Image 1 (tube, rainbow, N blue to C red):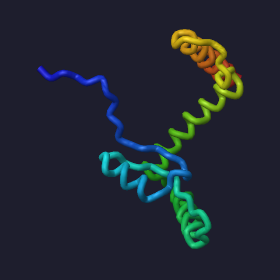
Image 2 (cartoon, rainbow, N blue to C red):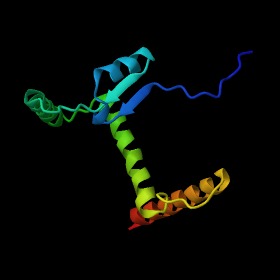
Image 3 (cartoon, rainbow, N blue to C red):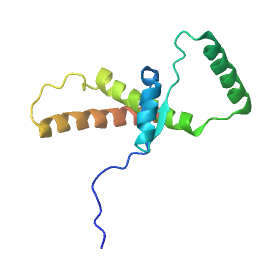
Image 4 (cartoon, helix red, strand yellow):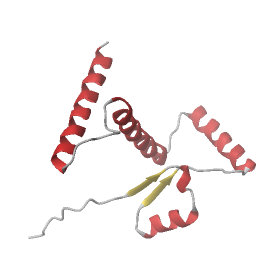
Length: 122
């Protein structure tokens, strides 16, 4: 009988434009991951124009790449984290011990869930 591991299998590495470096992409691929890193054109005007043209074509075709869909999921999670920090007290947790911190954060998630349900019902 095969023993099941408790490890998480990571298939993607989601990063923002600050991590747009070839060495990071290569390392991600060496781990058999798919790097999904937002492109940072920096000061390359030709690359900026190329990205803008590509975006226009994709919008015209109503097409989104799989990488963009995964990247948008990351930004959704970031918005939830930011909301928890800014509106529901997770920025400054003033308790000690794992259980108390966990309880504090779960009350924030509960309040966020209720807030979203109220917004959807209106």
